Image (cartoon, rainbow, N blue to C red; front, top):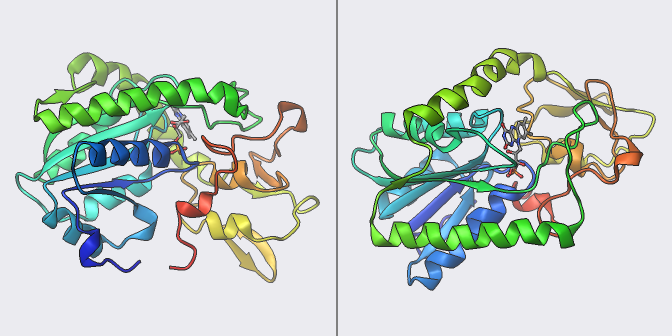
Length: 285
Ligand SMILES: Cc1cc2nc3c(=O)[nH]c(=O)nc-3n(C[C@H](O)[C@H](O)[C@H](O)COP(=O)(O)O)c2cc1C
């Protein structure tokens, strides 16, 4: 991605989004900041180098970081992104996560990594968004009915407006940055971290239904899927964002050997109708 002078903003958001929810909230927040008179822009961390991000952060007044909650934790890509940043003492920052139901201290987990980098984390928030876990093994409820989803998005939009106003006011607001939330979040996070590496090799391809379009290979944020001898294989470094599983046009991506069950309807395909996951990963770059 090429960064121009016009890309430099007062508020920058760096987000990772597996299936579009965190992208949606980030863009909604940007709309709110612009309404409040800021120059603001959101960047997917898949489309930007660490040096470009650093340049944008240094030129900004406030930097935001956003990610989906995975087992009350932040995705590995976001953690690595933050860890690669140099120490930036005193830079004002906010952090938010998107989640389906609950995470305890989902935002604080990322916030603590940012604090270690010297950021002055002043605002933290959790946004309830649609569930993107549509794998057949764990039959959690999810929906692809965008009329029903509009209620969830309407609530998230209101929450984004309030969050933007809090940031604008300068008033510190750190939801979930407390001991109780930490203890509750840890109950889910610690076992999740223990089994995470086992999950990393669970994505596969049902070669009988695969149409060889290569979308999963192109979409994967961590290049876990790749071609070898014209066959799609996996490296075992999946971060379980479920992008490939949810957006495969013929549901040929499997999780723990199981493809998506047609009886469950379409897998989760993002917060808005015809959501295009290529916005999350600029395929030209
Ligand atoms: C591996 C995994 C773990 C998840 N863990 C949680 C969780 O602990 N709590 C929760 O409320 N939602 C959880 N979710 C749901 C997502 O956090 C939620 O749908 C999020 O908004 C997805 O954002 P994205 O579309 O930007 O990837 C999980 C999703 C995945 C894929």
